[in-house]
Every structure is written in C-alpha cells, then in structure tokens.
Image (cartoon, rainbow, N blue to C red; front, side, top):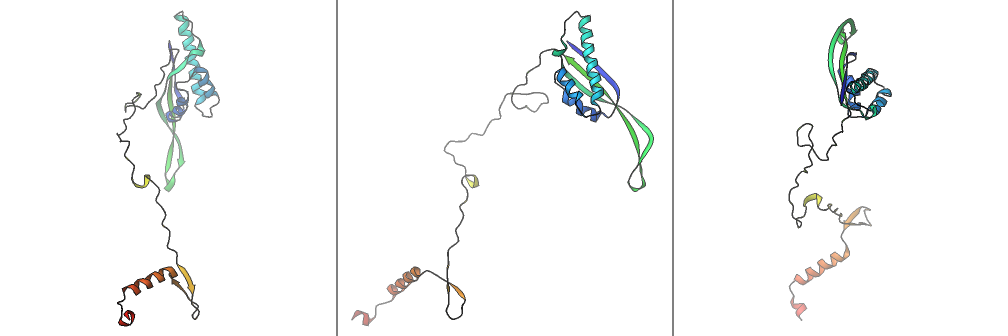
Length: 205
C-alpha cells in the first residue's frame, strides 16, 4: 500500500531542500522523522510536516480500504523536490563596481511517497553503465601466464651504486691532500711492467 503527500510553495530554494530529502530517501518512517527532527537545516521542519501528512494519508487510506496498516512498517519509497516560482523583491544589495543585485525569494514543492511493500535488496557488484541497474558481473582480467614475470621498476627495487673509495694521503712538503691508489694495485702494475720488458744480455748472463 502506498500513500503520497505534497507540500507546495515552501520557503527556500529547491537546491537546499534536496540536501535534506536525500538524507531520508529509502529510510524507515521513524528513522526519517528522527533525522528531520535533529537536522540543522531550515527546510527540515517543513519537510517533517509533509512526512507526517503522508503518514496520516496512509492511515486514512487503510481505513477506507478496511486494511490494517502499521505506521512503523512504512518507509520512504520516493522523495523529490521541484523548483517553485521565484519572487523578485524590490530590495537590492550592493555589488562591486557600483552595481546592485536584486534580492530573490525562492520557493519549492516537496513530494513524499510512503509504502509498506517489501524492499528490493540491492545486489552486490558494479553497474553496467546504465543508471539504476546493478549487475553481479565482474570485470574480466587480462590473461597472464604463471611463468611470466613483471619487469621494470615493479620487479625489484633498484640497487644503490656504491661510490669507489679513494684513500687520501697528505704530502709532507706542501700539505695538500692528493688521492693515491692502494699499494696493492701499484705492486700489480709494477710486476706487469717488469714482465713486459725484453731480457737484456746482462740478465741472460
């Protein structure tokens, strides 16, 4: 069973009223009334009156149809806000560069539909691109072989290169520091040079 109530020409813009209506859509009646009661929005008081009017309409429709309806079983099936007329006032507000902005008074129309029917449970999954539809299909993943390894930076962190160590020795005369290689490397080069030299006659004797 469904019951509807509408409140027209409510003070306030439709954009601000939609912020309140979005909080109660799909909620139970008791939960929606609690949200409206403790909301700090100015439009919540007027929307609460519209909600109570819809509950009264549901009870009256049930009595006429000779059907028992529990108000606690009702939930907000549909709730939307339409834009109303805009009244231009004679008052103006100062604006930059010597201009003046005229004050406007906005109105809106609120409609709430209550129902005690069973709710449709939302299915888990992602939408298929159409609004209001949900599917269980999962996005297909690209086929990858088990032996395939990921390359690049994701495979392994890049190892830090260690700077070559240079021994610093102080000269006795000038006091300046000069870089000299290790003695082991010097000895190896000396042996290589000695091996490359041609044997002389004195060496042969």
